[in-house]
Image (tube, rainbow, N blue to C red; front, side, top):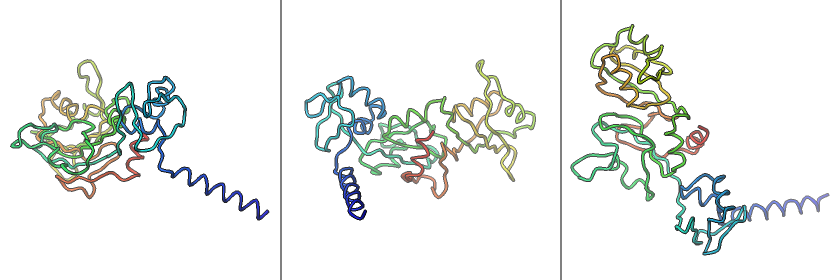
Length: 256
């Protein structure tokens, strides 16, 4: 009995050593390069469009070393670490890269944060503030921007005038805009504030969609702040500052 126990232990040790040999599965390497998901990578590998060191690989579960050359449809791939960075965007910073150093953009605020090229997963206009997620994970960015995923966003905003109870009720019941009924998850006045400060939760449309809702009833949004995005909050994240997501937060996004 003792002998069998030792044998089993040695097998486990060997398996553990094999899993940490520095090699990476080919499908994971392709996914990390931002080409597709691991499952889709398996399909491409089977189709014979992936080469490692000049040799076509069709073997499932194939592993390679970090120094191997991988080509996908004859284009060389470079695997990279997936990065997820959350910025609390201030007002008057453009959401796109500006050519002039005199113009402020969000990329100036995250300069030097990581060596990888990371981009916003969605738009947050120059005059909007709040949460903005950056990543080099193209699959994640695509998922978060897909309306069918119904990614939750909460905005705190101020209107140019007080929102009447009647209009708040209309928004709650839903407005028909361009032939489509738009119904927010919830909307309410901000407690202990004037009735032109509003909280609204939506699953699609973002800042632009929220602006359209109020414009439909004759209101203008004076300022708007995204305080919640896809399960992420501004807690302990001051304006103009950023942080990388925790493992738990990344796993939360992957479950969307």
